[in-house]
Image (tube, rainbow, N blue to C red; front, side, top):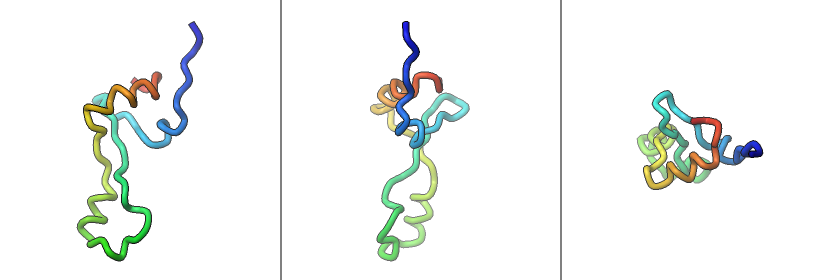
Length: 66
């Protein structure tokens, strides 16, 4: 059976935590930041976990990370 290819876009966007959960960055922190308050921008800067509905898809794209 041939080797599986890693989805390069997914590799750059997701990382696997120590407990095999998938972390991601939040959206809406690129531009138009003057209209967003400091608390919102601070929270957007933090990482969050991928939802349970999307975990299976991400794991297929990153076959050698788990």
